[in-house]
Amino acid sequence: MAGDAALPAWSNQFAADARRELSALGPIGALTREWAWGNGTGKGVRVAVVDSGIEADHPAVGGMVSGGVVVEFDARYKTQVRIFDDAAPRDPFGHGTACAGIIHARAPEAELYSVRVLGKDLTGRAMQFAGGLRWAIEQRMHVVNLSLSTSKRDYYGLFHELADDAYFKNVVLVSAVNNISEPSYPSLYSSVVSVAAHTEQDPLTFYYNPAPPVEFGAPGIDVRVPWRDKSYIISTGNSFAAPHIAGLVALIRGKHPELTPFQIKTVLFACASNVTRDV
Amino acid sequence: MNNDASKLLAEQLRQLVQTIQASGRAILPSSNDELLQTIVEAAARLFGAAAASIALVDEKNQTLEFRVAYGAGRAEIVGMQLPVDQGIAGYVAMTGQPLAISNVQQDPRFARDAAKKTGYVPRSILATPLLWRDRVIGVMEVLDKIAAPAFGMQDMELLALFARQAAIAIDQSQQFERLSDALVRGIKTLASADPSMSAGEIFAALERTGDASDVIELAARFYAIAALGDAERAMATRMLEAFAEYARAKKVTSGG
Image (cartoon, rainbow over all chains, first blue to last red; front, side):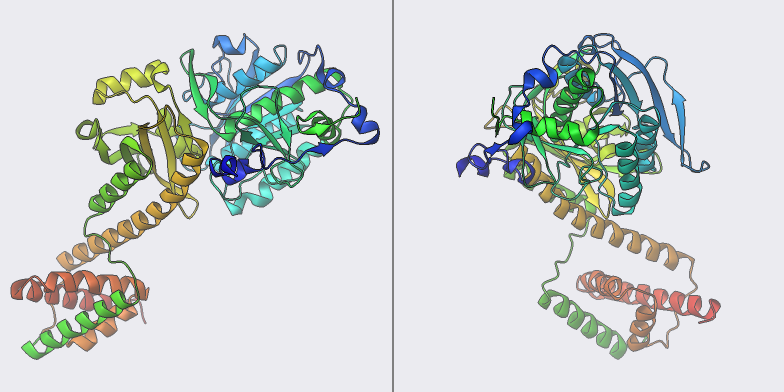
């Protein structure tokens, strides 16, 4: 079990010697990647990246940033946040740009929306995060990438409510699992697509885990990603696994706009690299 | 206080400290920075890093201040303050999430700033939050993995576990320092101590002031001072008396 020793708990299930080979049966076994997203570009699909912003003029996002907002904490408001339009989205850290770049590489014609929820203020971060997620749901984004999470139990209910709201409004939330071995929200909820990193580099290799809450494994180790000031770095974390799946969801939604979040999860399962299909 | 009472106090303090030691409770290093330095050196050695640092969050000023470091760039980085909305450490403080980057020189702003400020541009960085009760109190970074080009996912998981232990120790140490500061401030504003007060009364007053663990830690600290010599013991005793007086006065004025 040497492979297991090198991986943390959240990625363990995706190691070669721990992975379970699964079968998709009946009509689900007839689903193919070609049917799911073959020739797809994500055209007409709107993807929100709730993070540190997106550097709109970074070549890695191909000019596809179509809008954005900045969410700031303000205790005077009922929702405790103020939301401003961001005419020229930027990213002071680079992390949101990294996620957007991964999504764009997969779904080059998907529209990207920068939802910047990290600012100068350390207080109220969870509320900013919740405010940004709420905005994305209200805008009926087709896909929301959440490579952020909160571990604060106090916010369990708030984020659960938002996750349910997203599900009922046909918004797919793709959430990175915490990089620290402790619970994090919203990645633990059943309605979200929760993703951890596996060790492989091929961007289209992803696995389904039949023993959730971590449901999917995608590349997240030593991934080359765009970073601030038009640079690229190599980085590691579950943060970079989630946008690989978000990009695929954008492709699926572009090709099959009629599919609902739970149907999309089924398509992802059927197309996973460790699932044997009939065809 | 007469000489017998002083001896009694010293004896009671000694017994208290023995009790603490017997219970296995660690006595914290006398300085917070000393503790941080121990942690950062341990982190560098455990994770095979050429350098390491700890920055603590200043919530009021929204900054991160590098308090201790180990290895290359150490002298330059200690004391450096960064706004929390910048850089790798800022991101980690903001999100509470660790981040590992391996060709960090490719981030031009990072490389430029690091070279300017410390003369040292690492190749790889693993940064993890110091979390204490849902709060990010700081960021620990290990730099330049010696045996590999990058820190891996397992390093990330283990450094996070290590950081959790470190955060607990740092928080305890900070609380203790705050308590000591408050005590010194209180003493400065107090009238002279009541010479008729006995050690028993002092302890009784201390016990009324709140959390017993704080009292034990206070006692341990004062015992350490008293053990330095007669003059120090007298000083420690006077401080205890003053604090007891303060606590008693506070209790009276609050109607208790």
